[in-house]
Length: 299
Picture: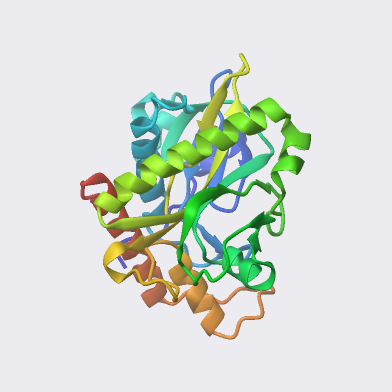
């Protein structure tokens, strides 16, 4: 194994606001937060062991790439990305290099903005039963993993525990208001379509993804959390894509496939990931990063 998974420095504990499944959120200067992408990995609502060494760096650097690339479409939450610019005491912690960012504190919209361009996963299961995905009617006769006629916007609630729940667009309007819902749908589809076109030129199909947005102090929509990573998206290699079957992927489907095959009943405790799955996941994440950015991440 290349290295041990990241461990949070104990000196940062007094500043910890929230520990999510894969990210730690710290209080920074007024109106700012420090987000740290750990090496934890989750699947089926469980945080798995061990982590994937370097995963947090890969996710952070890829998110930074996409945030910068699409800054003309929507502002993002980034204030600083270099460790030295994170402020005290974070700038002194070498373990945060590459995996921590200083961001603007936002009022987060309580809806995940999911865009699906292909018929796969839970969408495929629902389509087989109802001919719809998240209540949206689709043409008859589509195959598993087939590209949809046009990408669809399928929002979901953000749940602290358990699965996020798919909701209708009308329900999203009731939660956040019509004007904001329309704006987030438009933004999500625009980012997805431009990112999917870019990724395909580099040998990757962006099958689906999820976005999170917040509002700043002036009420402006800001893109936040993570951006088009293997944790939040489904990435397929173009050369192995074939409608009618679930393609191999560059995302954590590799981990899900192991968990599905080992007889786990999806109840705690989760089985430990074997080294082959840890290293295979790391290699897939790194390959996706290189294909998408054109750079080699040496971690």
